[in-house]
Amino acid sequence: MSLLQPDSGLLFWMLLSFLIILALLAKYGFPVITKMVNQRKEYIDKSIAEAKKAAEKMERLKTESDTIIAQAYKQQQEIIKEGKAICEKMIADAKNDAYKEKQRVIDQTLEQIKAEKEKALSEIKASVLDISIRIAEQVLRKELESKQQQKEYSARLIDEILKSENRKS
Amino acid sequence: MIRKIITLMLLLSAAPFAAGAEESGCGQTAKGQEDVNVREIVFGHIQDSYQWHITKWKDKDITIPLPVILYSSESGFSCFLSDKIYPAGTEYNGFRIATAGKHEGKIVETCKDGSEIRPIDISLTKTACGIVISSIILLAVMLSVAHWYKNKKADSPAPKGFVGLMEMFIMYIYENVIEPCVGQSSAKYAPYLLTAFFFIFINNLLGLVPIFPGGANVTGNITVTATLAVITFIAVNVSKSKEYWKDIFWPDVPAWLKVPIPLMPAVEIFGMFTKPLALAIRLFANCLAGHCIILSLICTIFLTLKMGPAINSGMTVVSVIFATFMNLLEILVAFIQAFVFTLLSAVFIGQSHPEKHLEKENATVENINQ
Image 1: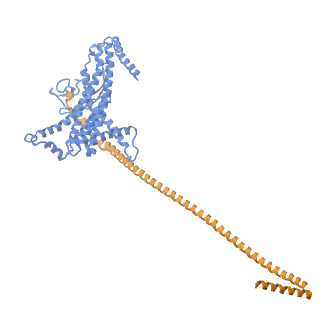
Image 2: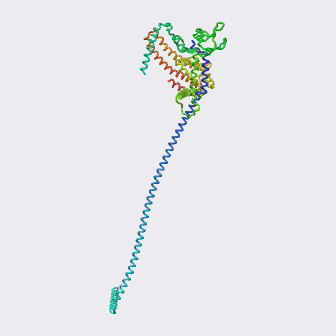
Image 3: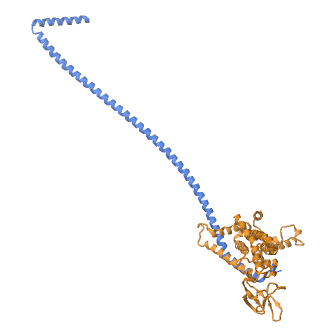
């Protein structure tokens, strides 16, 4: 039976066709495809690795920026606090200064008033003295117009002086 | 869906009644021809032939004549279409198809002295024609797919559609069969293994198509499978390291197995040849068996024609169901046989590189067996 009997003519065609296919596909077919797929695979693997690295970097940068932001916030808070304190102190100082100044002005004024008052008082005193002396002069002049009156007055003065001498002794 | 199938079956079972009615109406034409010779039909389809038989229409064979190319010392080169020598036995320029004897079914030349000789016959027979058709399809498909990759960079988007499908297919074989089995020299052997895979696969598929460009029993032909096995044999044995030959002629076994009687070397050398032989026979037998079963099932319809319409109708339904099932199975087998051939070739090639990791190979083989 020819089923199990190889045929030389068919062998010729089979070898010819198969070797042609093999030659063509080995040169232009499969290596092109497998090479490209492997290249793509490498590229994808590389891309994934790079993406992973980038993600890690992003994560790191994010934590870094977070700490920086936190620090900045803290600093800001501190600055605000400091500013507030300074401000309060300044206000307090200003108040204090103002109070002192006020006090000083008041004191000065009071002193001035006092001085003025004293001056006025002494002036008044002087003029009162002057006036009273003149009044007394007038009164005395009027009272001592007669000799009699002068004698009497002198005697009374002596008495008074004596009395005061006695009282002293 | 199920309703459609049932309707189809009813139609099929009704067909023999109609045929029977027509026949009786025509008046018992050629009653003798009804004896269906299953053996002849089946072998006619699976054997090689000088013409491509398509169908029989009203007692007339519709065939595609194929070129006959002959060389003999008697008459030199001769080239003609095969319809000149059909029906078998018709003589043309001294050539005819032998109907009996040693060269039954082949072209023989009658010499002047009356003796018959077999000329050198490189006719484009049905199988050869099938090989050429499938080769052209394979080349067109693979080269067009490969053409897509031209001017593409590694960062170009992956292919879609048919190219994507073929890429997936090729890379499936490459990554799951060739790379684990062959290892480092994958790139060297991949073109042959992939070509063998797709050659067998496309021929198996074309063999399942019942009309013209398909239907040739290419992978079920011992010449074809033997050629493939011989190429695998060459790939396994040629340009191999010293370790490979040492393993064959002086393997790592107790010395009494090697001297004085070289028992193990004999076994190893025997193994060298049984491996490709097994490859050839496995592929041949599997593909032939598939064709035989489908053809036999279809023949059952015509065998039961004489047994009356009832039996014939029943058998028609059963045959069609079985033949459909077998065809689906054969599509699976078409892939499996191509896969197994490629896998075993890859394993043999991998084994001939002793430094390769055997564990990985065994793991793959076990995986496939599961």
